[in-house]
Length: 215
Image (cartoon, rainbow, N blue to C red; front, side):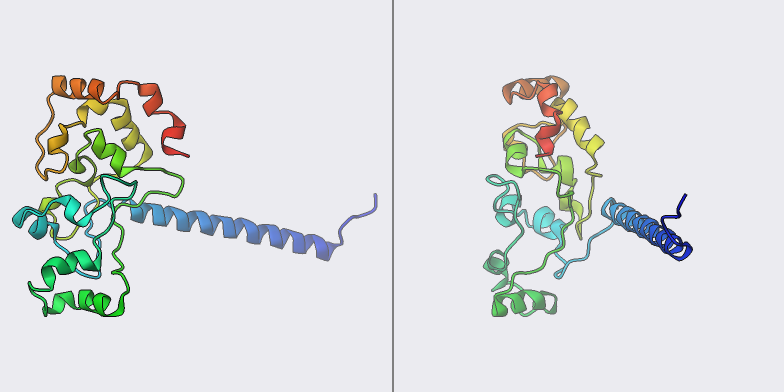
């Protein structure tokens, strides 16, 4: 039989396949490293301004919705704009060194580049407005932010963690008046079951359907 490839061509093909395999291995390793980094729990995330939820929420008592202005109306809760920060800090600690980034943002018109603490993959759909409207308190996912000097991820946000809530929502629901409370009390089982019925969250098949989160 006539040889299709020369020895040199065969060697080149093998080297190319090895290069592709090595590139794929490196890509998988990098992706895994990034995934592990994204899943770090309890590790404070550095920010351009060291914003303390402990001070602003726990000590001063600022409501979540004051900074996260779209949490009740959109999928994304929103990040505090320079204008929102300046409603207080144009007067309070206006010349403090720690707020230099805020002053630069106001002067340049460029928004503050806050670092995301809770990041989901692009193929996952999550809507803040739906969850808070159904009685899922902020603390269920974000933890006690009123005790965080710098914010960190309190929950893994992995698929099985989310499905655990979707399979048993009664354990994670609260009266709507308590949704934004930083120290929302634990819901009694009978109260949670009643809330689930009232919010039409008793259909486990619908809540765990792939299309609910992957659209």
